[in-house]
Length: 313
Image (cartoon, rainbow, N blue to C red):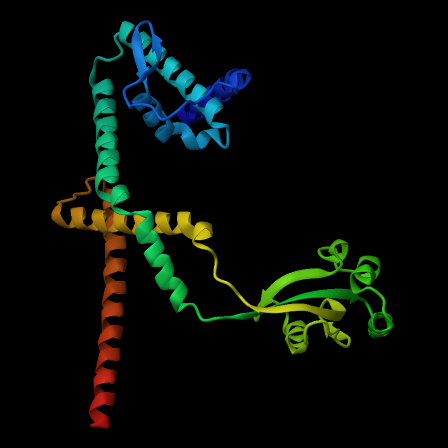
């Protein structure tokens, strides 16, 4: 916890110091080994920047690219200074440092395996193929766009409907009279919604209208409404760009789980700590029970299907 807090404080300080240099140009694409700075003659390269970005890039939020590069360089400068100071103090000797090196070597190897076998195997083209398949399976769904005016009594709702029929502007009446704070200032606009998104009485009345029509007073648990239908359409699916990152993340996660399961299947994992061992065994037992239940359900379904097909012959 302390280590994380220290990193955040360092990043905040580096960000503040880098802001005056926001005009620093990132420049064109450069070779991975190009030196961008030196510390007492020690080179900091584009490859180092890439590794630092992988480690702390998310902590930098939405800084401009030029500012982000400067912050990453300063992070690496201080990293180098602290590392050399530790060497001077002979902190690179002893079992504690060796243990830490083993841990970070395993992390580096894990990251290398992910880049080589998992991340690189999931392409945007594969995500687009998955998206296209899912879109084909989506059944068209009708949705409507409506405005409403919410009041406390049926008589008031009838009075407002009469004013609309006499030519009054529905949106203006909503701004003046509606008790719905979420839509009042926007002339009662609710936007598009599909079946199942509104309370039943309201939804039934809205979907019964034709474009431009205004409903008679409708009662719900919120009060009395009059509803104006603005539009009808078949709900469009989200665009690929809107969901691309979620699809890629999900595909990478699934591939990582499959890879981990395969590697675990070939490995001998022993839990020595008794509490951890107890929890691991309990979890494994629960997973085995769930697997058996699923297998039994599938078997039952197959048997029922075979029996039904046999009866048709």
